[in-house]
Image (cartoon, rainbow, N blue to C red; front, top):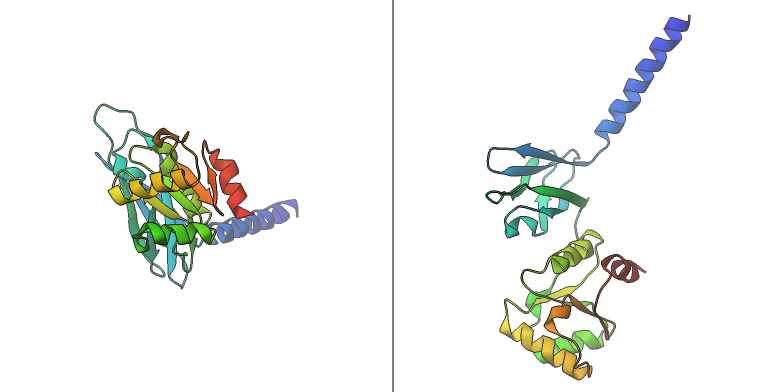
Length: 208
């Protein structure tokens, strides 16, 4: 009798475990090759999903850490990221991801081409983020904003001279001559300038 009860319990446990294992709508898998690490997203559902994926680590090419948003068709497995280790390095990394039927358009920077347009966005209370190249903190901030589905507009002052002009004009208008490029990432939220950001606290503030 006890053996029968034990067998029934084990079968029930295995069934529960199996159901939990299959309940993950989108699954991330890693494939480690000789000179690269591949990440795949598998959509186990019957509807298309959009996946946000971000790697954080060291020992890889800079491009490896750019956030990715990719559509994953129903019941399909898609390559979403490739990490290329640097020579003579010991790579370390972590990753996080989120998914939805349709992710919001989070970064709309291409629609802003003039100082007047940026000024209007600031007056409307939109979240403006100034970033620069080779800025780990900038990359982490943008990744956190996307992971939390927080709408924002990014201006990379290293890639666009007009965006650098936007930056200095904005700082001047706010009468903050003490602010330096080294303070980046710098955010403007509801017309207020935020620098020396604690990323977790800042993102939590935006979520409220």
